[in-house]
Image 1: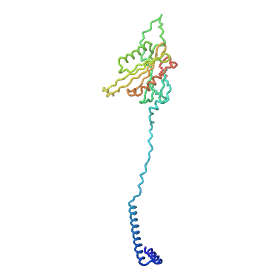
Image 2: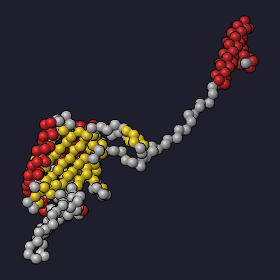
Image 3: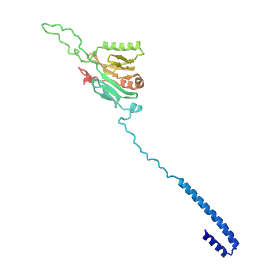
Image 4: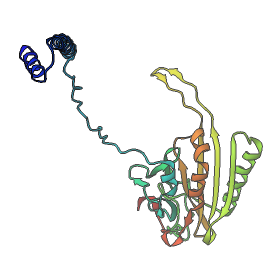
Length: 289
C-alpha cells in the first residue's frame, strides 16, 4: 500500500499538482484503500466461517436391492383365465361317457377315479363310478329235468361284483321318487331334472342340501362337525340287453357357497355329458378298464 501511495504522489508532482492536493489525495487514497482492506478481510472471514461450518455431504448408505422371492408354487389363474380356458371332451375312465372340461383338469387314479380341476370358486372334484352288486341274489335250487339234469342257468345271472342293472319300470320309479322328493321338501331338494341322451340313455340330475352335523363326543374321542354341503349326483341310465346300467357322476365336498358361486360353470360341464354306446362292454364293470 505504501508503494502504491508513493507512486500516486509522484504522478501528481509530475502533473504539477500542489502538495495540498497531494495531501488530500494521500488521505483520500489511504482511506479508500483502508476501507477496501477492511472489506476484504471481513469478506474473507465470513467465507472462512461459512466454510468451516459446512460439513462434507453425507452420501446415503448404499441400498441393497433384493430380488423378489420366487415361490415354488405359481400364482393361481384368474377367473377370466379359467372361464376362457380351452375345453375338450374327456372320456370318464372306462365309462361310456364323455364330458367337456378345461384342458387343465386332470384325472387321478386310485380306489375311486376322480376328475379334478379349478373353477372360479376353487377346486372341483368329480367322482365317477358304476354301482356294483355287493352280494349275489338268493336263488332257489333249480328243479330237476329228467334224471339228474338241472335246468340250464342263464348266462347273465348276476354275480358278486357285477354291475347293477335296472328294468325300465325300475328306472321310471327312481325318477318318479326323485320328483316326489322335490315336491315334498323343496327347501332341501333343489332340483331333479330328467333329460334324454342319444341312443336311448336317460339322465337324472339331482341336487339337494346335506344338513350340517354338529360336533359330538364318543368313546373314541371328539368327532368334528360337518358343515352344510351340497349333494349333486348325475346318473346316466344306459340301455343294455333290454335293461339299463347306471353310471354316476357326483361332486365331492361341494360347499353351498361354492355351488352358488360356480353353478353356471358346473352346469355347463354337466350339460356337455354324452353317452357313447360303442364304449359299452358286455360284461364286468367298465370302471376297471
